[in-house]
Image (tube, rainbow, N blue to C red; front, side):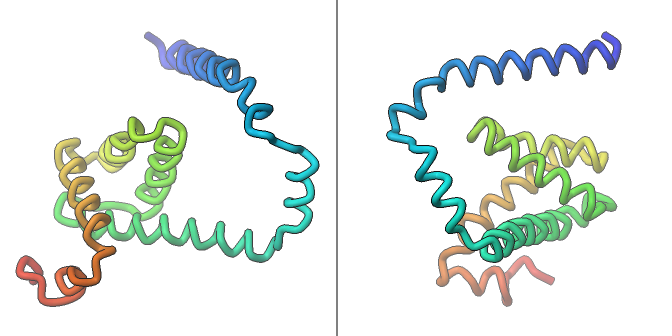
Length: 152
């Protein structure tokens, strides 16, 4: 299959999926008691500075995640921050759109973009999930900050 016809097929599939999603959610707005006037009032009262600051903080956190991925994958080969950052954003967009089913997209995108083995990137993904899970527990912080037995 040629690349242009493949792109067209994926675009049509995406449009069909979007159409199905819109058709299924056509009554949700009225059922939830949505009011356009209340939304407009909330938007008018919003502090633009705080909104921009929060969006900047979100993208800074994605940059930190990309740096962490670079640190984890340093033994697999050269990695470029720009590629990892873009694939991290794309991966989290897939999680937003597909839910948990979008989780494996980020390691797959990173493996393809950086030319790394897929199995190794899924290993890094599992390590990253481990760090995500345990970094919130203050009792385990010493493992991540200093004195961890596997750290050189």
